[in-house]
Length: 327
Ligand code: NDP
Ligand code: GDP
Image (cartoon, rainbow, N blue to C red):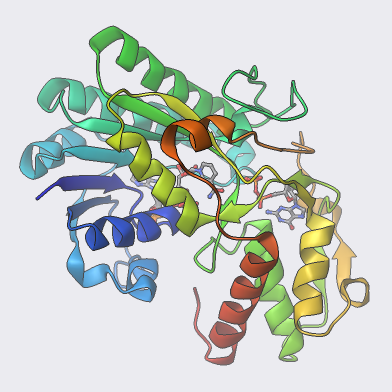
């Protein structure tokens, strides 16, 4: 039986990946940071129905000793480093913490593996935010990076450490440069989920308006369920490498919003208010990925259409809002 260790298992991708790996017969372990709200921290794992099929371990990405101890106990064949302070806007409020968790956290996991499990395969959760101020119309593995937030800068460090440990120590370390991916399990502060939750609340009469920032920004949005499959595929390859994972289609926040309101028979113009407090100190205006390498080398392709993703998210939020559920 293969053994996987996932950091960030309580997040959106962690839940989908845990579910995928359990369905493939893996023994799945997760590193979870201690929380005073331990009863709610596994809400996503419960929602997806995998919470009782995995083992959680107390640790923190900023605490190298805890990672070493967990790796020694678990003896993983595959390690997926998904843990991060992942919200771009918060990275200006907490730039140093973001550097420690999102950047140095990756180095801590790589160091732990180098010390006690050098043969384990490593996946680094890199991001399209590293392209930031884009240097090419469609971004591929060859496009130069230009991060626009402390989050993007921290991720760039984790990305290059992954490349460097592969080249320096021959580790099987791969980096997935994933474009935005969403689902009903997306954190509520991200724009897609903020919109679908807001639409549900307005439809059910709990709110009248939805306050947003720059709705002209464009993103290449896919479904998290499809994207975790790409993570797994990367670690099944004989050789480690870096891959862009994207749909190849870009859509504005405005158009995402229109689709979400239309799904419940409402018009966004009747409810959306532009609130400058949601503008960012530096913006990533547009992202559009070129997933050709992933298709050719991994046989991977995004399966879910944006329209279906929007419907799934709005429907899930209607159920949750109706039942007073928090996630
Ligand atoms: P989430 O924000 O949903 O999950 C982040 C996870 O990291 C949570 O489990 C969180 O734990 C954990 N975490 C935070 N700080 C620490 C810490 N100090 N020690 C240990 N764990 C910690 O992110 P997603 O699931 O959406 O994304 C997964 C990864 O992929 C992240 O690294 C993200 O930056 C990256 N990524 C995501 C994209 C997307 O569109 N979703 C695009 C490209 C990359 P807790 O539950 O306690 O908060
Ligand atoms: P990001 O791409 O990782 O920053 O993901 P987000 O979902 O947080 O933001 C996507 C885009 O939506 C960014 O360009 C934001 O500026 C824009 N946006 C517009 N209004 C909002 C808002 O109210 N909240 C968030 N999170 N983003 C918003």
